[in-house]
Length: 87
Image (cartoon, rainbow, N blue to C red):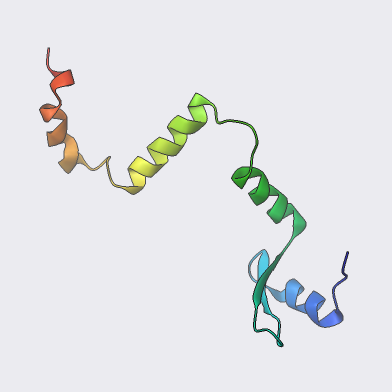
């Protein structure tokens, strides 16, 4: 494991976010340095080996629908066009 230099430690300590963008001056390659707990939490969410439960899938769908403004009252007119909603 590589340890931080004094300059890197100071940059991490003063960063506003839980991560820090750094650049390799030779290759100009940009990297993101972040705390291990943030990385672990993100890694577990992105690469979770466990399948999602029905509740998790529904929550994600509802969140996506809200971001798409499907809860806007102006869209309620489309509910009347759904043949499944007719008696």
